[in-house]
Amino acid sequence: MKLLVTGGAGFIGSAVIRHTIQNTTDEVVNLDKLTYAGNLESLAEVSDSERYNFEQVDICNRAEVDRVFAQHQPDAIMHLAAESHVDRSIDRPAEFIETNIVGTYTLLEATRHYWQAMDANRRENFRFHHISTDEVYGDLPHPADFHPSPLAEEGQGEMGQQELPMFTETTPYAPSSPYSASKASSDHLVRAWHRTYGLPVLVTNCSNNYGSYHFPEKLIPLIILNALEGKPLPVYGKGDQIRDWLYVDDHARALYKVITEGTPGETYNIGGHNEKQNIEVVHTICDILQELRPQKRSYRDLITNVKDRPGHDMRYAIDASKIQEELGWAPKETFETGIRKTVQWYLNNLDWCQRVQDGSYQRERLGVG
Ligand code: NAD
View 1 (cartoon, rainbow, N blue to C red):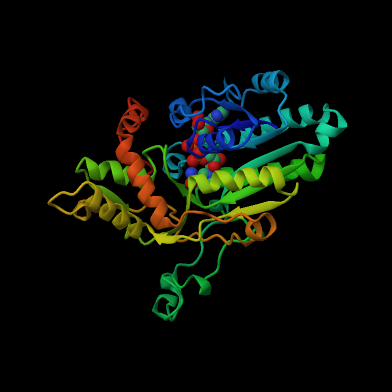
View 2: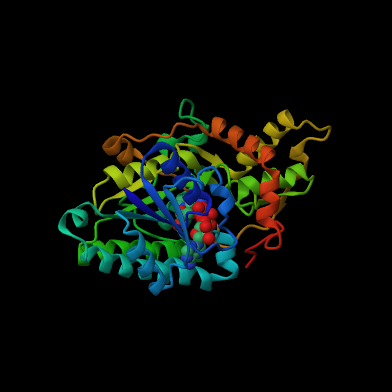
C-alpha cells in the first residue's frame, strides 16, 4: 500500500508514520505544511527509508494537493493535518476554520476527483480515513454532579466509571470550543462525501493522546518541562476536569487497523480506558520526576491554580468497545506505564524540546479569552 498521511510531521501523524515504516512494507508520503506544530525531526528514525517521502504542502492549496496525488498515486489517505490546540483556537479561531474545515473540504474534493478516475480494482480498495477527536461530543457530567457520588461507592473502580455515561459512536455532536466545532464540521463533511458521492471513508474519534514528540504547549509536556526548570505548573481552575488518556503509539496501531480492516462508512471511537482528573496527571508527573530527578523541594510545590479556560469541558470518556469487538484492537499501555515512558523520553530529549520551541513559543499562557 502507498499511504498518504496529512499532518505527518505532527505529534500523532509522526507516530503513525514511524509505526507504518517500522512495522509494515508500505510506502508513506507525508504531506505537511510544517506549521509551528510540525517538525521533521520527529521522523528522524524513519526518514532515511526509501519507502518514505515528504511533500511540504498546505491542504488548502488544491493545485498542490492535486499534483501530489498525480505524482505519488496513493492507495489510501490518513488525514491528520489540523490546527489542534484548544487554547490557540480561543485566541485565533480563523486558522482553525481555514485548515480544519476549508482544508478538509479541499482535500475531500481533490480525493473525490482522484478516486473517481481510478481503475475499478484500485477504486474498490481505496480508503479516506479522517482522524478526529472525542471533543466533538461536548462534555459529560462530572462524578461530583451525581448524588450520591459514584466516587463514594465501594468496588466501582477509582472513578466509579461503570456508573457514568460515556461517548459512543452515536452520541450527538455538541462541541464547545472553536477547535472542537471545526473538527465536528470536518467530520460532517467527510460523512457527507461518503453518503453523497460514495467516497469510501472511515472516521475515528479519539481521546487525549500523550507520549513522545508532543509539542510543549499541551498539558503533559508543559508540566514536565516547567517542573524541570522550577517554573510554576499551571493547573486550570481546580484541576478536576477529567480526560481519558491514550498512549500515542497505541493510537497509531489503532489507526492502522482501522484503515486496513475497518468498514467504509463506519465510525470508530478510540480510547485508553484511563480517566484521570488533570490534577491527578500533574501529581503523577511530579512524583515520577521526584524519583528520576530527585530534588529537595517537592515538584508538587510548583503547582499553581490559574484562571480556568473559557468554555472548559468538564469530562470526556470514551466507550471503545466497538473497535475492540469488531477489529480486535486494545491499548497495550496503561496510564502508569505510558506516563513513565513519556517522562523518561522528555528527560532524554530536552534538546528536541528546545529546538521545536525556539522563536515560536515559550510556554506562555494561551487562550484566556
Ligand atoms: P499536531 O498539532 O501535533 O500536528 C498537526 C500537523 O498538521 C502539524 O505537523 C502541522 O504542520 C500540520 N498542518 C497544520 N495545518 C496544515 C495545513 N493547512 N496543511 C498541511 N499540514 C498542516 O496535531 P496532533 O496532536 O498530531 O493531531 C493530529 C490529528 O488528530 C488532528 O486532526 C487532531 O484533531 C486529532 N486528534 C488529536 C488528539 C490529541 O490528543 N492530540 C486527540 C484526538 C484527535
